[in-house]
Image 1 (tube, rainbow, N blue to C red):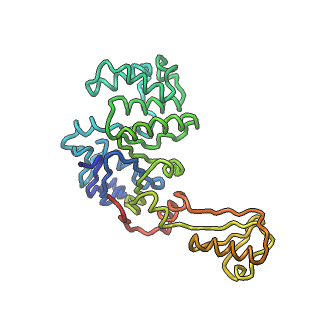
Image 2: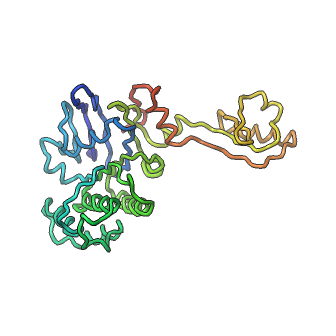
Image 3: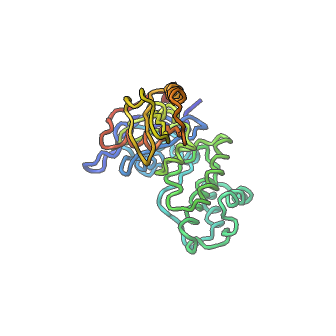
Length: 308
Protein backbone atom coordinates (compact mmCIF):
# COMPACT_ATOMS: atom_id res chain seq x y z
CA UNK A 1 0.00 0.00 0.00
CA UNK A 2 1.33 3.42 -0.93
CA UNK A 3 1.89 5.97 1.81
CA UNK A 4 -0.70 8.71 2.25
CA UNK A 5 2.06 11.31 2.66
CA UNK A 6 5.75 10.96 1.91
CA UNK A 7 8.62 13.40 2.44
CA UNK A 8 12.02 12.50 1.01
CA UNK A 9 15.06 14.62 1.94
CA UNK A 10 13.10 17.90 1.93
CA UNK A 11 15.21 21.01 2.50
CA UNK A 12 14.23 24.66 2.17
CA UNK A 13 16.21 27.80 2.86
CA UNK A 14 14.97 31.40 3.11
CA UNK A 15 18.10 33.52 2.75
CA UNK A 16 20.36 32.66 5.67
CA UNK A 17 17.59 30.72 7.46
CA UNK A 18 17.53 26.95 6.93
CA UNK A 19 13.82 26.35 7.53
CA UNK A 20 13.85 22.64 6.66
CA UNK A 21 16.88 20.35 6.72
CA UNK A 22 16.77 16.91 5.11
CA UNK A 23 13.25 15.97 6.28
CA UNK A 24 12.30 12.37 5.51
CA UNK A 25 9.34 10.42 6.84
CA UNK A 26 6.03 9.04 5.66
CA UNK A 27 2.48 8.79 6.96
CA UNK A 28 0.49 5.66 6.31
CA UNK A 29 -3.08 5.65 5.04
CA UNK A 30 -5.62 5.96 7.84
CA UNK A 31 -3.18 7.37 10.40
CA UNK A 32 -3.95 10.27 12.73
CA UNK A 33 -0.51 11.86 12.68
CA UNK A 34 0.77 14.78 14.75
CA UNK A 35 3.40 17.23 13.52
CA UNK A 36 4.60 19.17 16.56
CA UNK A 37 7.27 21.73 17.31
CA UNK A 38 7.84 25.20 18.77
CA UNK A 39 7.24 28.36 16.76
CA UNK A 40 9.72 28.58 13.90
CA UNK A 41 10.42 24.84 13.88
CA UNK A 42 9.37 24.48 10.23
CA UNK A 43 5.91 22.89 10.56
CA UNK A 44 4.02 25.35 8.38
CA UNK A 45 6.85 25.43 5.81
CA UNK A 46 6.68 21.64 5.52
CA UNK A 47 2.91 21.72 5.13
CA UNK A 48 3.24 24.47 2.52
CA UNK A 49 5.59 22.20 0.58
CA UNK A 50 3.00 19.42 0.76
CA UNK A 51 0.27 21.75 -0.46
CA UNK A 52 2.36 23.05 -3.36
CA UNK A 53 2.54 26.55 -1.90
CA UNK A 54 6.33 26.45 -1.47
CA UNK A 55 8.81 24.64 -3.69
CA UNK A 56 11.58 22.86 -1.77
CA UNK A 57 15.21 23.50 -2.65
CA UNK A 58 15.66 19.74 -2.85
CA UNK A 59 13.72 16.60 -2.08
CA UNK A 60 10.33 15.18 -2.99
CA UNK A 61 6.90 15.31 -1.39
CA UNK A 62 4.03 13.03 -2.41
CA UNK A 63 0.34 12.75 -1.57
CA UNK A 64 -1.12 9.28 -2.18
CA UNK A 65 1.85 8.58 -4.41
CA UNK A 66 1.47 11.77 -6.48
CA UNK A 67 4.43 14.16 -6.65
CA UNK A 68 3.26 17.59 -5.46
CA UNK A 69 5.26 19.33 -8.21
CA UNK A 70 5.25 17.02 -11.23
CA UNK A 71 1.77 15.60 -10.63
CA UNK A 72 0.29 18.52 -8.76
CA UNK A 73 -3.30 18.18 -10.03
CA UNK A 74 -3.68 14.66 -8.65
CA UNK A 75 -1.78 15.59 -5.47
CA UNK A 76 -4.12 18.48 -4.74
CA UNK A 77 -7.19 16.41 -5.60
CA UNK A 78 -6.18 14.03 -2.81
CA UNK A 79 -5.38 16.75 -0.26
CA UNK A 80 -7.54 18.99 1.90
CA UNK A 81 -5.61 21.75 3.68
CA UNK A 82 -6.81 23.97 6.50
CA UNK A 83 -4.32 26.87 6.80
CA UNK A 84 -3.54 28.93 9.89
CA UNK A 85 -4.50 32.21 8.22
CA UNK A 86 -8.11 33.30 7.80
CA UNK A 87 -8.38 33.55 4.02
CA UNK A 88 -11.84 34.13 2.56
CA UNK A 89 -13.77 35.97 -0.16
CA UNK A 90 -15.99 38.63 1.45
CA UNK A 91 -18.48 38.67 -1.44
CA UNK A 92 -19.92 35.15 -1.01
CA UNK A 93 -22.15 33.43 1.50
CA UNK A 94 -20.95 30.34 3.33
CA UNK A 95 -22.83 27.97 1.02
CA UNK A 96 -21.63 29.83 -2.10
CA UNK A 97 -18.08 29.61 -0.81
CA UNK A 98 -18.34 25.84 -0.44
CA UNK A 99 -19.99 25.40 -3.85
CA UNK A 100 -17.24 27.47 -5.43
CA UNK A 101 -14.58 25.37 -3.69
CA UNK A 102 -16.25 22.19 -4.93
CA UNK A 103 -16.28 23.63 -8.45
CA UNK A 104 -12.49 23.88 -8.44
CA UNK A 105 -12.49 20.07 -8.29
CA UNK A 106 -15.20 19.64 -10.91
CA UNK A 107 -17.86 18.68 -8.36
CA UNK A 108 -21.51 19.67 -8.80
CA UNK A 109 -24.78 18.87 -7.07
CA UNK A 110 -23.16 17.98 -3.74
CA UNK A 111 -25.49 20.00 -1.52
CA UNK A 112 -26.25 16.92 0.59
CA UNK A 113 -22.55 16.61 1.52
CA UNK A 114 -22.29 20.37 2.05
CA UNK A 115 -25.30 20.19 4.38
CA UNK A 116 -23.61 17.40 6.34
CA UNK A 117 -20.41 19.40 6.71
CA UNK A 118 -22.36 22.49 7.79
CA UNK A 119 -24.23 20.41 10.37
CA UNK A 120 -21.15 18.84 11.94
CA UNK A 121 -19.28 22.14 12.06
CA UNK A 122 -22.21 24.07 13.53
CA UNK A 123 -22.65 26.25 10.45
CA UNK A 124 -26.18 25.33 9.34
CA UNK A 125 -27.71 28.57 10.59
CA UNK A 126 -24.89 30.54 8.92
CA UNK A 127 -25.20 28.92 5.49
CA UNK A 128 -26.74 32.00 3.83
CA UNK A 129 -24.71 34.58 5.76
CA UNK A 130 -22.06 36.59 3.98
CA UNK A 131 -18.52 35.57 4.92
CA UNK A 132 -17.47 39.08 5.93
CA UNK A 133 -19.99 39.31 8.78
CA UNK A 134 -18.92 36.07 10.45
CA UNK A 135 -16.81 36.01 13.59
CA UNK A 136 -13.23 34.78 13.45
CA UNK A 137 -14.24 31.42 14.93
CA UNK A 138 -16.99 30.98 12.34
CA UNK A 139 -14.62 31.87 9.51
CA UNK A 140 -12.24 29.20 10.74
CA UNK A 141 -15.07 26.67 10.64
CA UNK A 142 -15.68 27.59 7.01
CA UNK A 143 -11.97 27.01 6.25
CA UNK A 144 -12.32 23.51 7.65
CA UNK A 145 -15.46 22.97 5.56
CA UNK A 146 -13.64 24.13 2.41
CA UNK A 147 -10.87 21.61 3.00
CA UNK A 148 -13.40 18.79 3.31
CA UNK A 149 -15.81 19.64 0.53
CA UNK A 150 -14.10 17.47 -2.13
CA UNK A 151 -13.78 14.51 0.27
CA UNK A 152 -9.98 14.24 0.12
CA UNK A 153 -8.36 11.06 1.48
CA UNK A 154 -5.67 13.19 3.20
CA UNK A 155 -6.67 16.09 5.46
CA UNK A 156 -4.07 18.53 6.81
CA UNK A 157 -5.06 20.70 9.77
CA UNK A 158 -2.60 23.50 10.53
CA UNK A 159 -3.55 24.87 13.97
CA UNK A 160 -7.28 24.38 13.26
CA UNK A 161 -8.47 25.29 16.78
CA UNK A 162 -6.25 28.32 17.37
CA UNK A 163 -8.38 31.05 18.92
CA UNK A 164 -11.68 29.18 18.72
CA UNK A 165 -14.12 28.25 21.45
CA UNK A 166 -14.40 24.94 23.28
CA UNK A 167 -17.68 24.10 21.52
CA UNK A 168 -16.03 24.22 18.09
CA UNK A 169 -13.11 22.12 19.27
CA UNK A 170 -15.42 19.36 20.43
CA UNK A 171 -17.53 19.54 17.26
CA UNK A 172 -14.47 19.60 15.02
CA UNK A 173 -12.70 16.68 16.69
CA UNK A 174 -15.89 14.63 16.72
CA UNK A 175 -16.29 15.15 12.96
CA UNK A 176 -12.60 14.66 12.15
CA UNK A 177 -12.56 11.52 14.29
CA UNK A 178 -15.50 10.20 12.28
CA UNK A 179 -13.63 10.88 9.01
CA UNK A 180 -10.50 9.20 10.36
CA UNK A 181 -12.45 6.10 11.35
CA UNK A 182 -13.87 6.06 7.81
CA UNK A 183 -10.32 5.82 6.46
CA UNK A 184 -9.20 9.42 5.96
CA UNK A 185 -5.61 10.21 6.87
CA UNK A 186 -5.23 13.19 9.23
CA UNK A 187 -2.10 15.33 9.62
CA UNK A 188 -2.42 17.74 12.54
CA UNK A 189 -0.24 20.57 13.77
CA UNK A 190 -1.26 22.14 17.06
CA UNK A 191 0.15 23.93 20.09
CA UNK A 192 -2.59 22.33 22.20
CA UNK A 193 -0.56 19.28 23.16
CA UNK A 194 -3.47 17.70 25.03
CA UNK A 195 -5.26 17.53 21.66
CA UNK A 196 -2.32 15.77 20.04
CA UNK A 197 -2.03 13.35 22.95
CA UNK A 198 -5.72 12.50 22.82
CA UNK A 199 -6.00 12.17 19.03
CA UNK A 200 -2.71 11.19 17.40
CA UNK A 201 -1.35 7.67 17.14
CA UNK A 202 2.07 8.69 15.79
CA UNK A 203 4.04 11.91 16.13
CA UNK A 204 6.94 13.75 14.55
CA UNK A 205 8.57 16.63 16.43
CA UNK A 206 10.56 19.32 14.67
CA UNK A 207 13.15 21.71 16.03
CA UNK A 208 15.08 24.22 13.92
CA UNK A 209 13.92 22.53 10.73
CA UNK A 210 15.04 19.03 11.77
CA UNK A 211 13.17 15.96 12.97
CA UNK A 212 14.14 15.33 16.61
CA UNK A 213 11.54 12.61 17.25
CA UNK A 214 9.48 10.27 15.08
CA UNK A 215 7.63 7.55 16.89
CA UNK A 216 4.30 6.26 18.12
CA UNK A 217 2.74 8.39 20.84
CA UNK A 218 2.75 5.52 23.31
CA UNK A 219 6.43 4.77 22.75
CA UNK A 220 7.38 8.45 23.06
CA UNK A 221 5.57 8.63 26.39
CA UNK A 222 7.13 5.41 27.65
CA UNK A 223 10.65 6.59 26.76
CA UNK A 224 10.28 9.53 29.12
CA UNK A 225 8.02 7.91 31.67
CA UNK A 226 8.30 9.44 35.12
CA UNK A 227 6.35 7.85 37.96
CA UNK A 228 5.87 10.06 40.99
CA UNK A 229 3.98 9.08 44.13
CA UNK A 230 2.33 12.07 45.81
CA UNK A 231 1.75 10.93 49.38
CA UNK A 232 -0.27 12.83 51.97
CA UNK A 233 0.83 11.46 55.35
CA UNK A 234 2.50 12.76 58.51
CA UNK A 235 5.78 10.97 57.79
CA UNK A 236 7.49 8.50 55.51
CA UNK A 237 8.60 4.97 56.46
CA UNK A 238 12.15 4.96 57.81
CA UNK A 239 13.63 3.22 54.76
CA UNK A 240 11.97 5.65 52.37
CA UNK A 241 13.21 8.68 54.29
CA UNK A 242 16.68 7.78 53.03
CA UNK A 243 15.52 7.77 49.41
CA UNK A 244 15.36 10.92 47.35
CA UNK A 245 12.13 12.77 47.99
CA UNK A 246 10.80 16.31 48.22
CA UNK A 247 7.94 18.24 49.78
CA UNK A 248 5.32 20.18 47.92
CA UNK A 249 2.13 21.64 49.36
CA UNK A 250 2.17 19.42 52.41
CA UNK A 251 2.78 16.24 50.41
CA UNK A 252 5.77 13.96 50.03
CA UNK A 253 6.79 13.47 46.39
CA UNK A 254 8.76 10.32 45.67
CA UNK A 255 10.08 9.43 42.21
CA UNK A 256 9.71 5.73 41.51
CA UNK A 257 11.84 3.85 39.01
CA UNK A 258 9.23 1.12 38.49
CA UNK A 259 5.59 0.47 39.26
CA UNK A 260 6.79 -2.40 41.46
CA UNK A 261 8.27 0.21 43.79
CA UNK A 262 4.75 1.38 44.58
CA UNK A 263 3.94 -1.98 46.18
CA UNK A 264 7.15 -1.78 48.21
CA UNK A 265 6.17 1.68 49.42
CA UNK A 266 2.66 0.56 50.36
CA UNK A 267 4.06 -2.48 52.22
CA UNK A 268 6.40 -0.23 54.22
CA UNK A 269 3.52 2.10 55.09
CA UNK A 270 1.41 -0.81 56.31
CA UNK A 271 4.30 -2.24 58.34
CA UNK A 272 4.84 1.03 60.20
CA UNK A 273 1.10 1.75 60.55
CA UNK A 274 1.35 5.04 58.71
CA UNK A 275 -2.10 6.30 57.75
CA UNK A 276 -2.45 7.70 54.22
CA UNK A 277 -4.70 10.70 53.77
CA UNK A 278 -4.38 10.57 49.97
CA UNK A 279 -2.11 8.93 47.39
CA UNK A 280 -1.73 10.01 43.77
CA UNK A 281 0.29 8.54 40.92
CA UNK A 282 1.57 11.05 38.39
CA UNK A 283 2.90 9.81 35.04
CA UNK A 284 4.42 11.76 32.18
CA UNK A 285 2.44 13.51 29.44
CA UNK A 286 3.13 14.72 25.93
CA UNK A 287 3.87 18.27 27.11
CA UNK A 288 6.76 17.05 29.27
CA UNK A 289 8.10 14.92 26.40
CA UNK A 290 7.75 17.89 24.05
CA UNK A 291 9.73 20.18 26.35
CA UNK A 292 12.49 17.61 26.78
CA UNK A 293 12.83 17.03 23.04
CA UNK A 294 12.41 20.58 21.77
CA UNK A 295 13.78 22.64 24.68
CA UNK A 296 17.01 24.61 24.48
CA UNK A 297 19.01 21.62 25.69
CA UNK A 298 17.31 19.08 23.41
CA UNK A 299 19.63 16.94 21.29
CA UNK A 300 19.70 17.70 17.56
CA UNK A 301 19.40 14.06 16.53
CA UNK A 302 16.69 12.16 14.75
CA UNK A 303 14.89 9.42 16.68
CA UNK A 304 13.44 6.87 14.30
CA UNK A 305 12.56 4.06 16.69
CA UNK A 306 9.32 2.39 15.60
CA UNK A 307 8.97 4.89 12.74
CA UNK A 308 7.21 3.63 9.66
